[in-house]
Image 1 (cartoon, helix red, strand yellow):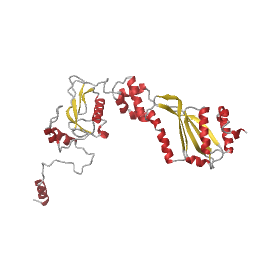
Image 2 (tube, helix red, strand yellow; image 1 turned 120 degrees about the horizontal axis):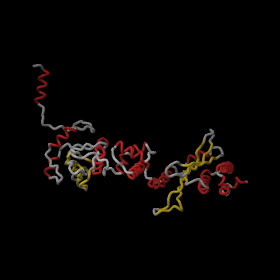
Image 3 (cartoon, rainbow, N blue to C red; image 1 turned 180 degrees about the horizontal axis):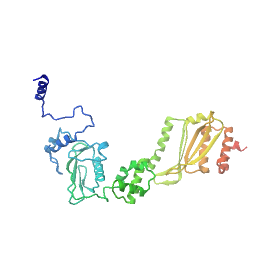
Image 4 (cartoon, rainbow, N blue to C red; image 1 turned 45 degrees about the vertical axis):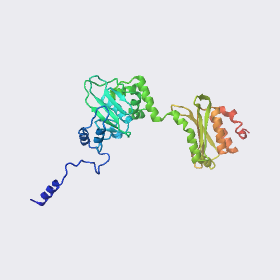
Length: 365
C-alpha cells in the first residue's frame, strides 16, 4: 500500500462524525438553509400554540436558529419553523409582504405582547403561522408553521392591502414618478401586484409615500428656528430672521410667513463689489408656493455676486419693504449705492415708490 493511501486511512480513522458544525470562520452573511432547517425539525420541541415548557426551552439551548435578515429577506419572506425575528413589527411586516406576494387574505387571530398568530381567511385552508416572544429578549421566533394553502385562490380584494402598506411598498416608484395621477397609480398596482385599490386607498397611499419622501411640511417648518440658531452659532455675523404671521393664527400658535438670510461672507464681499445692487423676485414652483426675493451685486470680474435672499408669501409692498430694510442695515448702504438701488426699484417695482421714499431720502434729491 502506497504512502498517500495510508495517510488517507489514518485521516478517516480519527474523524469524529458526531461533532456538530458550528460555523467556524464562516462569513456573517452565510446561511445553511437545508442544514438549519433539518436541525430545527428534529430537535423535538413542542411547537403548539400553548406555553412552551421549561424542558423544551432547555432543549432549545445551544441550537443554531436561522435569523431573519430584513435587508435580504423582507421583500420576499420565506417562513420556516425556528426563524427568528428582531421584533414583532418586523414579523408583521414580513406577513404583509407575504400576503402581497402570494395574493392571500390573512387575518391576525392573536396579536399581543407574547404571541402573534396568523391564519388564512378561507374557512378550509390549513395555512397558519405562530410566532412568540422569546423570554427576557426582544426577539420573536416562529414556533408553528403550516405552509400549504388549500382551496383559497388569489384575493384581488385583500384586507391586508392597506394604504400605509401600499405607500411603503411603492415609495421608490412614486419617488421616480412624482407626476402620477391616481388612476395611473391604481392601474400600475393592479397590473403588477394584482390587487384592487379604491380611489381613496390610492390617494392615501400616494400621500403617505410623498410625505415620507419629502418629509412632513409641518415638522420641517418647526425646525426653522433651530436652523437659524445653528447659523448664528457657526456664522455669528450672519443675519437670519424669521417672521411669523399676525393674521393666520392657529391653536398651536402663529404660522410661518417669511425668512431672510444674509451671510457674513456676502456682507464682506459686498465691500469689494461695484456700487450697484440688482433686485428681483421669482415664484417658487412647489406645493407650498411663495416667492423668492433676491439682491445681487457685480464683482470686479463683472460676475453676479449674491448678497441676500428671502422667502416671502408673495411679491408686494410690505414684503419688499421688509426685505429692503434688513438689506440696508446689513450692507450699510452708502448714498452712492442708494441711487443705483433706487433706479433698480423704479424699473422692477413701480408700486414701491411711495413706500421706499422714507428709506432712501438721499436718492430723491
